[in-house]
Image 1 (cartoon, rainbow, N blue to C red):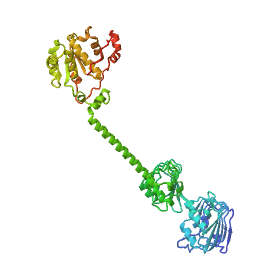
Image 2 (image 1 turned 90 degrees about the vertical axis):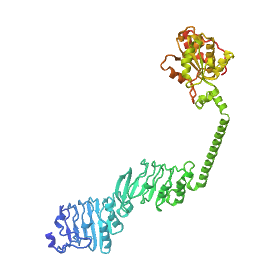
Image 3 (image 1 turned 180 degrees about the horizontal axis):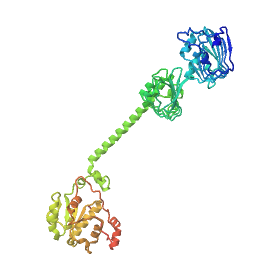
Length: 548
C-alpha cells in the first residue's frame, strides 16, 4: 500500500497470478461508503487506479468500495462466492466494469436500498458485471434480477440455475421459500410475499389451511365438501377440478364468490342438479366470470351444463314428488281408517276368524276369546274323591276363580252326557282329578274324553290333570288317557309347588295361551309314536271330536 501511495499518478495495476488471498487485508485502506449519507473517511486519500487486474490471485471476497477511480476490475479465476455490491465503488461517476468469470458465485448481496440508490444515479453511474455463472433466483437475488431487468445494472451472461437468463426472469417466478404444508408443496414468492400451494393428486379430503395463501391447486383429489373457513380473504385462485364435490351449502357459496377477482375451477365434479342444490347452481351461473371452466361444469348423471339446467323444472319435480307422497299418505291413512272402522264393526267376527287360523294370537286376550264361557274351570272327579275336591281343591280355587262342580251346578233331570258336554263347553279349563277310582268311573272317562277332544279341535290347552295317587303305575289305565299322560305334563298332589303350578295353569286375564296341542288324533299318534311303540301300546281309532 505504501508503494501505491507513493505513486499518485498510477492508473493501472496488474497483479495477475500473484497469490494474494488476503489482498483485502492489505489494500482496504478506509471504511466502506455509507450509501445513505454518501460519506467516506476524508482522512484517507482514495486510490487513483482505474484499471486493476487481480486475475488468479486467490482472493475470496470484494473490498473495493473506496477505490472510486476504478473503471475496470478484473477478477477472473478467483474464489469469490458472494457478490457484495456494497464492496464496489457504486457511488463513482461514470462506467464501472467488474469481470467475475470463473468464480463460484452463488449469491448476490443486493437489496432494495442498493436498487433505489443506483436507480437514483443512473445518469451518473453505470455498473456492468460480466458474470458467466448461474444464481439461485430466489429472494436473495430478486432485487439484483430486477436491477438487471430495469437496466439499473448491466449483468452480462447472468442466468438462473435453471438456465433462464437473469434479465428475463419474471417476478412471479422468484421464490423466497419452498416448504411442505399439510401434504402439499407451498411456495412463497418474492413479488408479493404470498404463498401458492400445489396439492394436485395428493389424496386430500379437505383444503389446506396456510397463512397468506393466494393460490391453491387442489385438483384430482377426494374432496367432497369445503367450508367457509377454508377460503381466506387472500385467496385469489382455487382449482378444485376432478374432486367429489356434489353439493355446497349457501354459506360456503357466499364465501366462495365474495372476492370479485377470485378465480375458481370446478369441472370434473359430480355436481347434483336438484332443487336442494339450487343456491350453488344459481351462484355458478351468476358468477360465471369467476368460474374459469364454466362451460365444462356439468351435472352428475345427465351431463347438462349450467346453462342447460332449468331451475324451475327441478323444483317442480320436487313439488310433484311431494304431491305424490302426500296423496299416497292420504290413501294409506284412509285405508287405515276404513280397516279400523271395519274392525270396530266386526271385531268379534274378525277375532274368531284369526283365532281359528292361529293368526295374531298375541293381539287377543283369553278373556275376550272365552267371554261367553261362564266358568273358569270344570272339575271332573270320582265320587270317592269328593272329600279332596270339596275340602282342598274347590276351597282354594274359589278364592279367585269361578268353579263348576256337578254336585252343585248341574241341572237336576238332564242327561249326564249332556251335562258333561255343557260343563266342558262353558268352562275355560277342565280339571281332571285323576285317581284309581277315577279310571274305573265311566262318567269320569267320558268327561276327560269330551274335554280332550274339545282341546284338540281348538288347538289349545284346556285340560289340567291332577294326579292324587299312584294311578300312573296302573297297568289297566285307559289307553287314550295313558297316551295323554305320555304326551302332556300333569300335576302331582304332594308337590311343594302344587298350588303355584295349578294357578299358573288356570286362565290368566289379558293373555292367550300360546301352547298348542295336536289338532287331531293322528297328530297325537305321530307326536308320541315312539313312546307308544316302546310300551307296546297302539292308539285306537276314535270318533270325531265333539264340537266345542
